[in-house]
Image 1 (cartoon, rainbow over the protein chains, first blue to last red):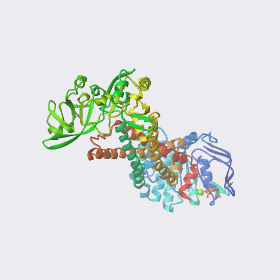
Image 2: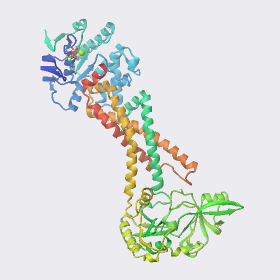
Image 3: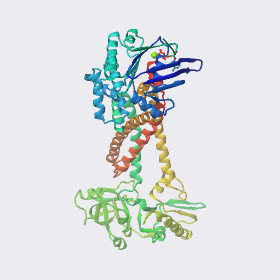
Image 4: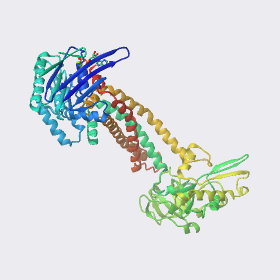
Length: 221
Length: 415
Ligand SMILES: Nc1ncnc2c1ncn2[C@@H]1O[C@H](COP(=O)(O)OP(=O)(O)O)[C@@H](O)[C@H]1O
Ligand SMILES: [Mg+2]
């Protein structure tokens, strides 16, 4: 499903070069639930961005569902992100000017769907995360855990085959974190979603099938 | 997709009342000024009743006579028009009429002030007046110097209350005229049709005017179509050059400049003060357009500025949309649509506001008989201005937004 070969990522600023990822080889099968662990600054978010096409690797290749994504034009990359990947961020990244249901509909806006179809799919996704009663609320009217559930609904509404989560529980207390984890595991089991979750939390990581450990931008085992 | 953008923009605008208010105020104010000006220009210069055929009309409005020690700038005189105006190639009709001059009438010891214009009979065919009752006088009335008159609604009210006037007699400047028709009031800024009382040329108190080359009259040439203009101008020029300058009532004239002008050219000459030989209406249009652009520049720049400074505020949104599948093109389309919606709303407010302002102008009566009602042309102008404004001030910020790298955009708010 996800295949990284010899991926390297270098950040160049005026003074320094940071080697954020180096020599990453990673094969993630369809339906796998993988967690990525490592200390702060070890390259976890960089890996998340590279897998999700939010950033290009400096070297090496990334394949999603067998499709090579290097050098694709902007429109194609946008299409692949839209179809294949759902993102969940540590800071939720909900659009504060839009209410819950409009936030959840965003991925569907970039497909040719009727508005009633979008609406019913978004409602289904919100039901899946237990927030069907909050569709007209704005993000600022929700708790952190609820906001992250909205974000999950948004990530799954387009039924992508890959879910990428960067410290999804990082801004939540442990009880809310557990809830989020439960939802992700459910998605993995019921929908056979391939999930890559970056996390600091060893207890959550242990619940996943495989742990990829990073240290200074390198894989360690 | 477009419907979505529109819905989304309206939601965002509603959620940001302060930003929306400030922007709408700036846009609305600018467009109100522009729409009102456009309306005033339109009402002054565009073809509209009674001058419905203005676009194929050439006028002889102005004569400039120069000698070594003398200089006369005036309307042309009757004799000049009589010699040069008739039977031009490509002309369908011509009319000669005097400037509207102030006259007094006395009715039961009350003084009524009016503007009186003396015209030939074809005047009523070149102009399409709206007759409230009766009919115009004819060519024969002019030839026979019949004492008949057409009056406007105001004059009927002054003389007869609101009773019918046709067949009754009015007194003006010591002469008595039988009313043949009543027309709707015509605004004073339309020189050609404006008057309160119209009477045949032949009723003039003396006939000195018939031998004068300079002063007091206007001639209009209704061409078959605009493509006849060059021929008409050329032939008219030939005839002018055949006038023996020694015949002029003013001695010592070396150069006589008269030129058939479109209404816009005449307005341009008057406003810009350019010499009649070189006047082109293009200058005036360019001046108006230039002033409009200049006036629009400041709010445009400030709107661009607001939009650019909101990029950072909207970074997270841009990142999210990109992550979930928006291409650069989609984002540009969305942001430009948002901006256009905003300016169209501003344009609508402006249209309503100018409607109000024009209504006030009309009713306060600064300009006699003004009828500044908005029309489709002005609505189209407001719409075009708003669209131009919206696209112009939206494209650059949108393009800048869309170029943000998704990772940077998402980091924007977390750092
Ligand atoms: N845009 C960037 N420019 C420069 N350096 C960066 C940038 N993003 C990340 N880095 C550096 O790359 C390394 C890995 O960062 P990151 O992937 O965010 O780590 P983690 O998510 O594991 O904390 C860090 O040293 C970080 O400072
Ligand atoms: Mg990180």
